[in-house]
Image 1 (spheres, helix red, strand yellow):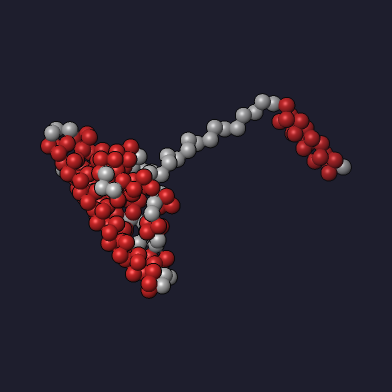
Image 2 (tube, helix red, strand yellow; image 1 turned 180 degrees about the vertical axis):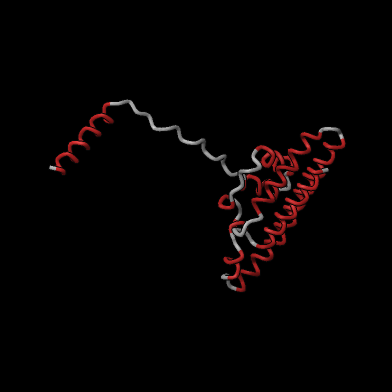
Length: 163
């Protein structure tokens, strides 16, 4: 008898829900698409203005999965590489670190010029974007050199915002 009541309950529940126009709750808005691929393409081509626009539009939208391979390596991954692969990664890292530092230096220069022109709000957008970018690099998902670089970007941005 108990199983018949249980079955009857399910039948009633399904009949009621099947006939109603229940709408599921709205799904949260999708995360903004990652700008990592286009950002690093622009940085490598030394298209500072394009890279700056990308980072300013979406400073939170950085995904290592969309970035060049070198940004997808953690320290743990690096240790597991062969000595030949480590050498290749180190050589590539030196180049990429230089390119990224040049880009961030250009953004800082632009922000400082904006601040000097009494456009503090715009300058702070640059600093916040630099800080967010630094935060995205400063995780254990990246090589130590990128973590350290990210930490430095965060500190510089924080100090500029507090001025």
